[in-house]
Image 1 (tube, rainbow, N blue to C red):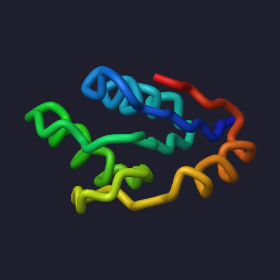
Image 2 (tube, one colour):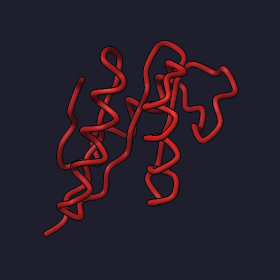
Image 3 (tube, rainbow, N blue to C red):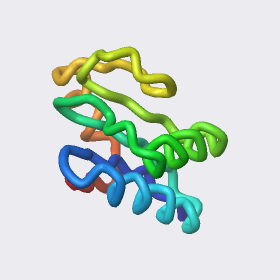
Length: 91
C-alpha cells in the first residue's frame, strides 16, 4: 500500500533530493519541503528538481526566492500539513 511521505530538507540538499527521487521507486507519494534557505544552484539539484516536476512530485519551500518549480508555503502552514503524512523524514 503506497504511503505519503514528507521529506524535510535543510542540509545536504543534493543528497536529499536524490534520495527523494529514489523513494519514488516504491510508488509512494513523496512531497519535498526545502527549509530556511534557497535551493543550491548546482547542476545535480537543477536536474533533480526538473525530474521531480516531470514525475508530478510536489516541492515546497518556506524561503521565498522565486525558485522555479517550488511553491511557497509558510512554516506554520507546513507544520499543519505534516500530521497527514505516514512518514516524515528530516534530512
